[in-house]
Image (cartoon, rainbow, N blue to C red):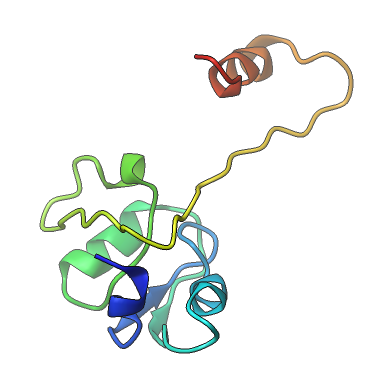
Length: 108
């Protein structure tokens, strides 16, 4: 499904857990993606539960949808949406930060 095909749907605006709606609008030429409701916390289970209850759609990384009952994963064919994770640190990371760097490194 193309992202633009979903522009007129009801959306859950969850900018701290999903892709913010203003970015979806920008990817769609500035139109659509109006929020049905807004969620301003970081627990990814809440927007998936709201979506499962019929309150709207939310765009999340595929990994965030694993085990979310009552939801369906619909792959987008275009435009390409990329989820990016960054680690900002001072000096050489150690411990858990070093493990995260290893996981995020290209070629894994």
